[in-house]
Length: 344
Picture 1 (cartoon, one colour):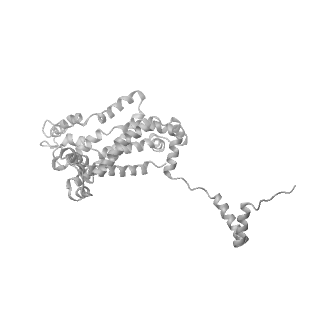
Picture 2 (spheres, rainbow, N blue to C red):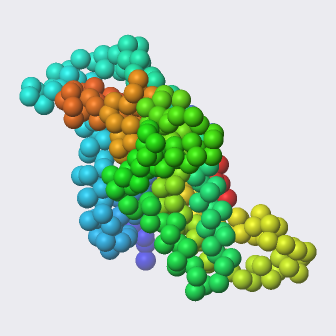
Picture 3 (cartoon, rainbow, N blue to C red):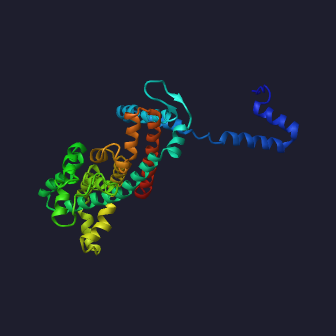
C-alpha cells in the first residue's frame, strides 16, 4: 500500500531553508543554538521570591511568629523609623513637625558643648563599667557555680537583687553613705580614722562624681547577663571536665580557660551585648545621686541630655537626633561584639 506524503515536515522545511540561505554550516549552527537555548538554565529567583517560597513552605511556623513580629514592628521598628524622621525636623509637640534638614545634627556636633561633654562622660563610663562589670559578673557566676548546690540560691539572690531594685530606693542607701557632712557614713569613718580633717563633698565635687556613679553602677550590674552566665556554667557537661582530666587538665584555672569559657560562648555573647546596652543607658543612678543637671554637668550622660531636651524643654526633634546618635553607638558596639564573640 502506497504511503502518501503531504510534503516535508516543519523541521525539514527549516533545514532546507537554512541550506538554501547558507549551506550546511549555517544549518548546523542554527541547530546548536536552538539546542543551547533549550538547555540554558532558567535565571535564579530573587531574594524576595526565595523568601516568599520559604514563607509558604513553613507557613505554620510563621503563624506562630506573627504575634511577636507584629509587636516588634509596632513597638521597636516603627519608633526607630519615626525617631529618624523626627531628627530632621523641628518639633515642639505644640506645632506640627517642620523639616529643617540636618540642622539638628549640625547643632549637636558643632555648637552643643554639653552634648560633647556628655558623650565623653558616657564613653568613659562605658569603657570602665562595661569590661569591668562583664568580667565581675562572669567571675562571680563562676565562683557561685563551684559551691554546693544548696547554697547557690542564697548567693545568687544576694548578687542579683540590687539589679532589680529601683535606683530611687537604692539612692537612699548611697546618699547616706556619700553624704557630704559628718553624718555621712563614709565621711564619718574617714574622719575617725584620721584620713580626712573635714567632710568631703563626694556628690558635689566634680572629681568624685563619675567615680561614685561608676561604683554604684557596678554594684547594680549583676543583672540578666549574670544569670545567663550562671545558667550556662551549670549546664556545661561534666564529661568535658572528665575528658580534660584525662588529657592533662590539672586545676580549676585550666578548666576555666580550656573547657568552661569555650562551652559558654553563647552566654558570653549575650552578656556582652546586655552589658554594653546597660553601660550606655546610665541615667537613673546619675539623676538620683547628683541631680539633673549635675554640678557643672560633671555627671551628665547622653541619656540625661536626651531627657533634658525631650521632657523638660520639649524639643522633640533635637531629642530624636540625640536618640539616633545613641542608637548608632549601641549598634556599632554590638556589631563589634558579635565580630569578637560570634565567630565559630
